[in-house]
Image (tube, rainbow, N blue to C red; front, side, top):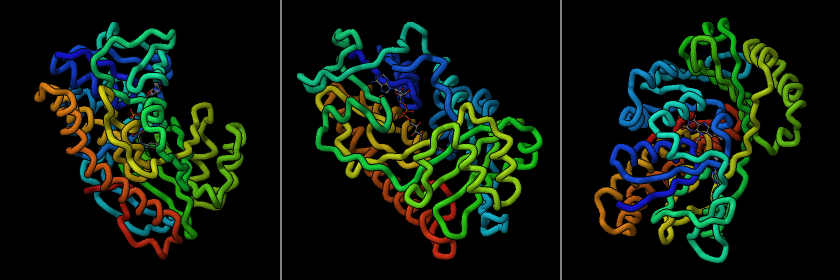
Length: 358
Ligand SMILES: Cc1cc2nc3c(=O)[nH]c(=O)nc-3n(C[C@H](O)[C@H](O)[C@H](O)COP(=O)(O)OP(=O)(O)OC[C@H]3O[C@@H](n4cnc5c(N)ncnc54)[C@H](O)[C@@H]3O)c2cc1C
């Protein structure tokens, strides 16, 4: 069996490594950040994603690290209930916990941290270590995220654009607030559209919150980290009291402001001996909540075809044929959810769930 280099140790790279490990295929992962830097906030994972996770993580252990959400409740910004929907096994987990669980099955000698992989601009498909040495592998699986430098070096004509939504994500450690939220996923919406505040419990004393801004209406991108809290306090001051309370009581040392990007058109998922998975193949906007599930399905499908097919190109082709239509569906759905978000509440008609389902 061929030797595989995996670039990036996010959810896609680590899940790929887990599937390769299951099939005893030789691989090495390279990650540009430090092991302890790989923290982050949290994910919503629908049932389908959980089914893929159960194949590589002990289910009892996985369930100890997160929380099933029972109900999605959509509120106006002042707290009037607009709609409710039962959630069918949607799991909430911190990124940090999921990364640790995925990394625990990987032997330390199979992963190198603080190693940035560089595309060789002279030779399509050749990758180098930061010291200029060629990477010793037959196949490169690229999972270096939505703004993949390796993808851009292979597909020079791609167009990436910033999405008309930015997100502030943070975590608050507060048992009383976590108890009050229980297992509900609460999301508050401004009547005029383009502004929301979502809350969900990750653990007994830990709550994830995120706020989505129409970045043409709200100048959130121009805020420095230290001004973010002031801006949030001001924008949300007249909302349901739970919202300003959470904003006030949170620490801002780990707050993150996400600018979201998407590809105008998807590239092929492979070229020569290089194949892309997860956000590197197909950035998905957060409205879909399908980033993790898609990353897991990509790694599962690619591993399956690498095992079944002698010829690498046939394996890549079957992987792309299986995965691309579903990704295109989520991209279209994500764009519909974005349009809804930008509209005033009374004009929002479609799918109240902040998840793209097939
Ligand atoms: C605000 C926000 C909220 C989201 N919420 C959800 C949600 O609720 N549910 C969900 O399913 N998804 C969600 N997503 C999407 C989800 O985060 C991603 O789809 C998912 O994490 C897949 O990531 P990945 O492993 O493909 O890429 P990443 O997580 O970006 O990982 C890429 C890794 O590659 C490393 N890297 C980059 N370049 C190099 C290089 N040259 N050499 C070596 N290493 C490199 C990076 O350091 C990083 O560790 C959200 C995204 C955002 C922005």
